[in-house]
Amino acid sequence: MRRLALVLVVFTLVSGPTIAAIWTLIIPRYEARGEIRVRPIIPRLVFQTDEKGMIPLYDSFVNTQISLIQCPIVLQRVLDRAEVRGTQSYRSPSRSLTERLFGHTTVPLQERLQSSLSARHRSGTEIIDVSLADPVAKDARLILDAVLDQYIRYTTEKADATQDMVYRQLVDQYKILESEMQGREKICMELRRSLGAEDAQELIRSRRARLDETRAHLTGLRNRIAMLDWEMKQTAGKDGSDRESKRKPKYHEDAEWRKLDISARTMRHNIAADSLDPNDPAAIRAHKNLEFAEQLLRLRQAQLDEQWNDHVADADGFDNPGRPVSVEHQLAKARREEELLQAELATQEAESKRLFEGAESLGKESRIVQQKRELFDAVRQRLDQKNIERNVPGPIEVLARADVSAEPCNDHRVGFTGVALALGLCAAGGTALITRKAK
Image (cartoon, helix red, strand yellow):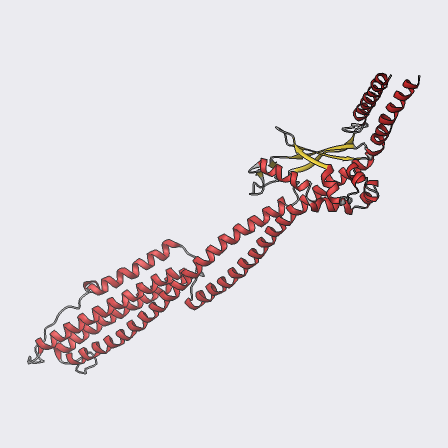
């Protein structure tokens, strides 16, 4: 009987304290589970921009989200929430068995939260499983919901910050290009005003045509001077009484007159065929060119008339009023007219050079304005797209809020209790064998 009592005492002394320590020191933990969905496609509202569509390197993107769930910024925001500060885990965090046995310093709350939080990508799906273990079931659910909320808020803020930075840069670029375009357009306006025409190339063409006509007139005049010079040499030493009567030649017999007449007729035909508005700058320039061509034609007719009269007067020694006109006088008059035409030609050439340089500057500025306008339109279009796509939801969402099972997770107390009972039985059996041998 005493032997049986001793065995029971040994069994009790071995198993009892061990079981008591197991059920006292080991704290059961309840696991809260939630789900986050990460879509591989960023949704769009209207425009297919660079930020929308398929996410490149999707696996890396998902793994990055797992790291963000457990990042210190998110965890600190969770611990800063009032409802989390009111939980038992925040006010009086439980100490682990190692801390109780060996007196280790309590782990900081953020590290404790990070160690109890787990995130894992479910293979072959768009879902990230998030779990959190805590001794209090309702605290586990509350803290995990806070983690999910703060994670979504943090990722949204980061995405918005990136979009805001790009948006601000677009707005700044928009203002810069708009200011540059306005400045360049003012320069173009000043150049057009100095040229006196909207279409610089058309003005240059008309001035070149006028310059060519003046050169042609000067060439004709020089031919006339050469003719008068030859006539003066031929008539030198002849008596003035030898005159011969000739019929007055027609205007069209003169080559220069025909050229001027064809030019005037061509201009009249072009004006009639174009049917431009009388107030159109091109129509005004065309009429001015026609007036100049007709003026040259009349001038040539007057020269031909004068030449005929001079020829008749030279034949009889008198002009129509009865005053003698010599070939020398005609030659001097023609040379004076040549000097005037040369001065006019020099003026026209200088004006043409000025117009050409102004047209080159205007063309260069116009090309720059066109380039700036194309870039400005691209920036404006991008800005409009940003404004429309600004509030479209992102690819990340909470698929399931925190849910806690009724039973603790990984509760090893029952198993450890069995081990303690086994140890007690072993100790009791050993005691029984020892006492039996002692007898």
